[in-house]
Image (cartoon, rainbow, N blue to C red; front, side, top):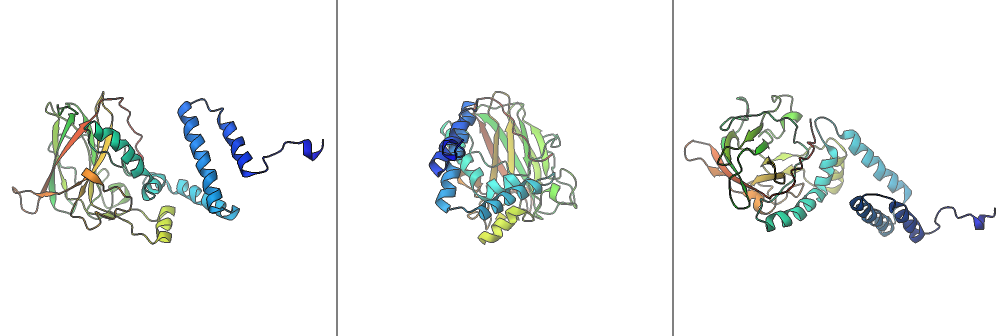
Length: 297
């Protein structure tokens, strides 16, 4: 058979793209087929726009391999990469438009440090060990539906970094599950817990994401914040964060997450010296209860 009669591989970029897209049409799931079609088109357009060479492609693939290898029990490097590129916040902003249009609470990044099996605690419990530094703080949480009716029996995971700048899973000096807890709302949809006022902290920079930030000459700090995930049957799961408006990095969060209504003033507690308080309303929209997979065990 002559070479002219052998089809072989596509000989130009347009024919190549058409061939890859044609193969993608075999995908059964409509949504997956659509997402992959768009991804393929954008990847090919990116390579053409940047005139990507093979050495650069290899470097990029090595970087992605390193991201996978850097992910483990104490850190999820893939989530960290999506965060520092602003992708996580972009997706959250798209979700926020729908949720907030219906009166729900603004969502935020889950982040790479949510763990499975938070300790189950009673309302009013302390989530910190006695040796945890920082000013004491009381957080009052109320979970409601879009009509501002209480949702009793909702599960809420809370977690935060220590004022030392590390989550307990990163820090051998902290007790396991320090500054973490799971609470259940009462018949009024409420609970409260005692913690320490959070401080800003640097994200992990010991992996490929840290090298990326170094190449970009970016700082590594996140402003002080608290994490919440609310779960109630018959409602969409909501992950959100509350940021300290007075943090010096509030306008330059390395993962671009300190936005909109998530930024709040932490109020001094008039009942205690050097103590703080915060009231958090979480409003859930009805829908399927899909619990996300925790990044860490």
